[in-house]
Length: 427
Length: 124
Image (cartoon, rainbow over the protein chains, first blue to last red):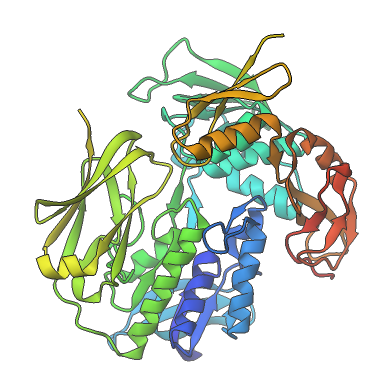
């Protein structure tokens, strides 16, 4: 524990968020940036997302996950930003001098501490495991999260099974339904508890419909059979209360059950640091600068809130990197009074959740998700309870992130203390 | 044979319109309904007459730091050729090192697109 180095900015995580954040920090004048990555390569989850569809916004072309990662890795290499691989952060603590002590461990150096002026959290998210789903039945082999199966097939070159049932219609589950089919497996059904899919429409069409894989909405797994290996899975319809309806059970013989039931931001470190966490997103509460409640600690990507498009992760992370660079430069302008953003009436949360008008960019992007499917509805923005603007949307769904843009000059004029964002449905 | 109606879900935006395309005996599009914008009609017409897809998969690597390398068709291929393309992909083996953009199979399964590597796998 004697080694002690100092760094201007430490970026935790070398996936899409960490890479874009580090590149932007350097580009905005931070000289001394270090990326810490747990895996043996940079790129994060993109390495196993071998399907295409990435980069349409960022590069105006359609790339696969590894290709998208390679673009950002090249930028980081060109900027000569140092990184440590196979290196894990075990603790974060705020020091009396306002800096952050980053406790780090790897095989060559052992345990050491880096004192950072600013930290960018970019640790990504984790899949919700079986233990968090309360599925009855035995605990045989053959039950995987969709992402674990994806790693087996796409990186290790191994097939987890031959006859597959998938619970949950998140994007990774849909992508894996296609992937397993292409590799010769029979995907029998995708069951989704909710009455709508959690995945992108494009994935429903190109991963399920293309291959004739049925999607059963309002269905869940009520039993798993098999002691050593999965032998069958029982699926039943659920009512509006999401409880199984007796008599609707159907048994599917299979050797594999994949779970694609949601992603949870990975914030153990953020919690240890004492930053405020949102009970809705499980990510830190951030302001317009993507700064957490701990000064100098920024968050971006899936550790902040789960995204459906990596392009938005890169965009958000670039902003976090630029803000961290401003912070360490000491050229911090006056922030002004914080203004809270309240998410109500169908809006589950917003990122950011706090705005300091003095620190806003000319156009502030507010990202949010809705809690159910809305058709022909309006996103209404209120400043101190007075209607400010509304945006009509033909459709909004929980699986697709939404955004509104607030111009700084309007807020400077009105100086609201509370901004409310709600959905208004037409009667 | 009379006209034929095909149902599909538009994927050009999150709306997900249910579109009905009417085809005549020559498999020509004669009518499109259910779309709410011109992009939907464009998508539906292409999708029922000549649906195309990019195929992504993996290829076995010999002597590499990883056992497989991810690959893609360097352009779209006809949708009904996907399984033939997969059969061709599964015959390919490459020796490490492999680099991003390397052509691993020319004109895969005669479908008009090369198979290229989408990541680096170094030799060990």
